[in-house]
Length: 456
Ligand code: NAD
Image 1 (tube, rainbow, N blue to C red):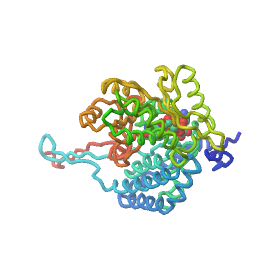
Image 2: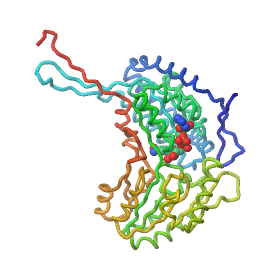
Image 3: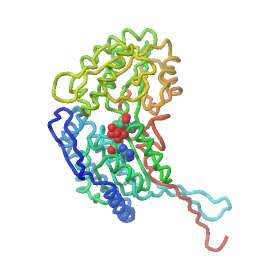
Image 4: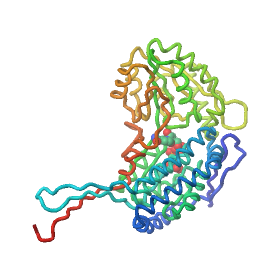
């Protein structure tokens, strides 16, 4: 039976963006075999050739910025300003890693005995298998592929089905920039292709939901290949009474409702400390009610919208108060009004699991200690924001919050492409993505002893 991968425009569900035949596991194995055959040549081509190809791809992304932003808007429903930002970041990441082939790949040490030299040298693994989610359809594939390719691996990317068209367009631009199809392969598919990739490649990088990510980590570990996984978040924002509450409310509205909350770094839990509670609650309700399509946009599909409205309804049935939003408006597209709830029971799924939508829970904390304890009471610790004018609070947050990313006086969402990125506790596994950390992840260190030939 031929299975077709389809992706539809979330703002206009009648608009079919792409339909391609699902390639199946055998096609994955064949693609990995071609990538493995191409890898020695890609490495031997040298730092200059790898740098030039990555640099040309950065230029191609910039030259097609409007088209790519339009495709992101159409395929995954991202608001235009954010889509433009993602394209700019994509170009910046290719350009940043275009410099990496020239960076030192090891160090020189003295031998303990005296004569000779000891070297460490980082070498690529071979074929990198990259599995991506749909919510950053160009940036996430790029922040995986660019470092993997820079250090001399070849790469096979399996995008999320919902982001197939964006990934295929990236592959076309890459081929035009000199990254041949076997050096950088994009293979559409779903769970079957993803699992086959994990089963065949030499190093695995996964971003996606917690359940799938844990299965990928188990499978890769079983095979003994290195694996990193960046998973879901249930991110908190702590607001202290001394914060600029107007600014905090604006940051929180952006972090809750921006791209309909479909970022792993979106804020899901707002923790207001002491006297901040009432003024923040009122300012945040107002800010969320002002959010429009230029900020929020639709959720990815009908199933997501129905799951989110059902979760809000069940929380209210369990005793929560809905302060604003939570309804699916009567219009085309998979929209949901940004929602703020209080008094959600601690055991309710909205309080325990990532829900990936424009919804936040408001909690009160008596003091900073209670706020930090509440923020840390989750395994999904990706990004936490802290809003305060006090340096003591900022330092306490940096020391005591269990989160991969801590952002003071900034929304929890927002990432600098050149620094390590990832979660803490159950939100991540393995080495960080981005920056130097990614170059380390895609290489293995060898220790080389060079001793004088005379037997000294
Ligand atoms: P998902 O887990 O459903 O899918 C992610 C990828 O895994 C897709 O390419 C999918 O086809 C593939 N896949 C599915 N089953 C597989 C299997 N058995 N073996 C191998 N691959 C398989 O996630 P999604 O809905 O595409 O994306 C949203 C999720 O991604 C959210 O949970 C979000 O928090 C997370 N996310 C995390 C980060 C981060 O850096 N921490 C960044 C963005 C998104």
